[in-house]
Image (cartoon, rainbow, N blue to C red; front, side, top):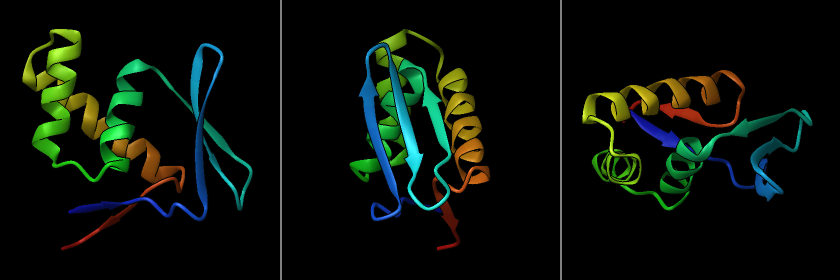
Length: 89
């Protein structure tokens, strides 16, 4: 499964204490915590899944299983909001 971000329809910014994504077509936005921000940046940079999970493990000193669960939950939430597309490879 490939995770695709349409950078023409989605924008993101840090606003004071939060990091937000906005869907330009619908005007909806999604706020990310620090874990989400790291995952999002990895997706934007087109980093491999394992590297993004490793970043979360290193930054927050959590088990790999926890980082994987966080990744999966966030990606599914973002897909549900139309902020990423999940494409079969």
